[in-house]
Image (cartoon, rainbow, N blue to C red; front, side, top):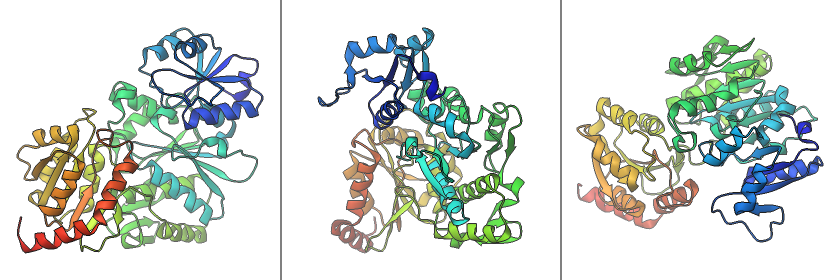
Length: 454
């Protein structure tokens, strides 16, 4: 749907979060009258004159010609299904905006890695002389990109945002796909359909990792028309044990500031996206490699916390799926590791992590501080993997266990679950981890643990 399709219509924005407010402001800027409807139990500030709540909100939605839905509204809600069944047009800010700007857009989605990959694409584009801006799920509303200039919009797209699209970006990148956000989508199959809706409306090119045939198979069932489907290897960009090989040029792994093999694949995806968007000379390829080497990793993604205790404390709080925990542990293969895992339980299977620990040669050197309902379930399911597990009463107890009871040189917060059992956000959980890691308490406890074996 396009913005002009809303002219003269009764329009309601459903949701008063960041994107809902951005949608309302953009509609107002274009002279399209709208109200914001907030359903459910969320409290709305009294100084929000354009917001209606409760029964009035539901009535306004039902009386609308078109609804601009916020990403936080689950499609599994009975009210959403009833409005859809009633024939009311439902769109989103992302879809309205993308219909105007798709030719200048590289869209990035995936269960994990999309923020890093999107940010890296923009960084590399800038380095090769193509101005770029990152918008979307990373925190900046797409309306921050007004168009009318030469900048490329690199858009991080969540599964929530992809679900309502009727058009694809010019270039689409999919980093990976495994179970996540199942409560919102209802099932993994629906999650997959919603996520891959990003590539279903004739992008020029879709790029996926070279090592994920299952994802490639799903995408092949979705794409239509003249869409070019490729992976980095098709563009002569390959991930090797030594680093990233582009033709005959090698960017060595130790020059890349991102940890882990999975991030090497994200780098390859970013380079392939840039090469698909603009033809690069050999000099520009060298500049692209330089840009990768100068990239500053994003916070809370295998981020090493500066400490003085001689150990490596790693904040991977954004790892809210078991597959991401596996990637974190694989980054420290061959090293003794204490893993802090768990949190709110969405009943996503821990199978990928358990299977990994069963075959990891040094799994006996992995200690797991299990926290929250999800951690308790993990502890009950681990079985004879070789890894030692300690069920901790809360996050503070998990930190104390990691500090007092282990002498692991690496302590990784890679929870595999959301934070909402104890914290308001993953940032709050990260802050608690960081504060403890940098405290004198953690350092003194580690010194004592080296004197007395656990």
